[in-house]
Amino acid sequence: MRISGTFLDEITHDIPSNNWGRAEWAEDFRIMKSVGIDTVIMIRAGVGRTAVCPSQVLSEQADIFPVYEDLVELFLDLAEENEMTFFFGTYDSATRPSRERTLDQEVQMGKDFIDEVWQKYGHRQAFKGWYLTFELGKMEKHRVECLRQLGAHCKGLSPHLPNMISPYLHGSKLVDDPISLDQHCEDWDEILGVLAGAVDIVAFQDGQVDYDDLPDFLRANRELIAKHRMQAWSNVESFDRDVPFDFPPLDWRKLWWKMEAAEQSGVEKLITFEFAHFMSPNSCWPAAKNLFNRYCDHLRKNGELD
Image (cartoon, rainbow, N blue to C red; front, side):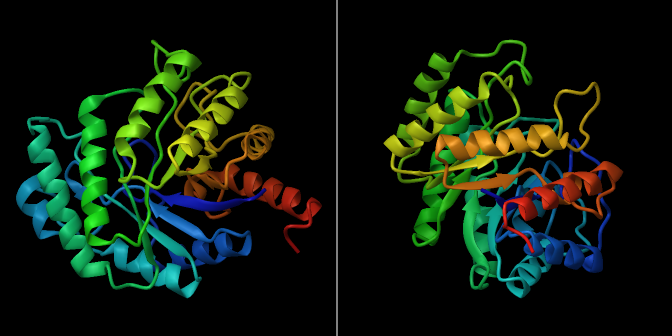
């Protein structure tokens, strides 16, 4: 089972920017297509005061910095040229220094921005879904309600398009107070019940728990997602959380193991965070080229690449 989708992260706030222009992005889309990637997910339309596209809503309500290039148009152009599906990632103000908005204000800004986006880009052929950017790893009622309301709003505008989320595991590699598998299942049974009808695809991140524990979490996630009649994908992280700095490309052996564990759990699709930085031969990380080469060797061995 190969990786057939990737996030696009050009609004970076915890990894370095590749500083690519149209030519570099065009080359990377070509490479992605050559190894079987058919789905690209823009992880966020903005964070704090930085955005990927000009927006009157975000200018007025989030005081964003000037936007000099419309990356949404660029990504849609390249997705269409390469016959890929594009998911639009919503705006995330969670890291804004002054977190003064109420839930109602946060949701209203999100809805206004989604309306603006749909009017501007919704007609594009590659626009095939929404990615709800807010991430969570356990029951957080505020964030769950944000997801539910924004997902429902997207459904009202485009009932034929799927909504996707990519939650994290509240595990020991991420937090000092990890929750147990039983608590994880209890929380996510409740969360997915709330999100039923507003979310169609759930792609849990896989990098926050120990490798010994990951297969149990993957199986539990797939069963929970199926229970709530959603599609189960797996976000196979291609960066390494086990080294003492943030964040280099993952050791190939770890990626291989995680891909096999995800396939054995029964998920429908493998996506990654994130090809351009951690798997592309053109990445600002030199080791990404070697990870790409090892991944291609693996695909050739399995008859999945000429």
